[in-house]
Amino acid sequence: MKSLTHKDIRRVYNLNSMAVIGIDIRGVIMYANNAVVKFLHAEDRQLLGQSVFNFFMTHLAKNPIKNYYHLKHLATRNFR
Image (cartoon, rainbow, N blue to C red; front, side):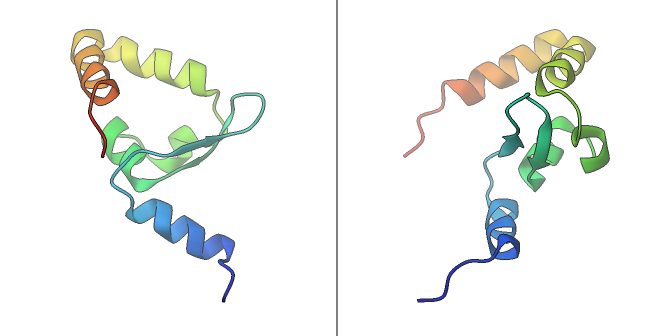
């Protein structure tokens, strides 16, 4: 059985329709797949290297009501 390379795993995450964010132990965004970029209307360079907490607080502050309901919808979805 062939083991997956880092490139293979990134390809799988980028094809995933669910948002996947990789953070380090300090909460710094190290990876964001295409679904995250699409959802946040941001580019990789805007995400990578930033604190996940600061980024989301800044992003939510731009349009708090719309983003609150969008995030609430995502959090209450029934994934099967």
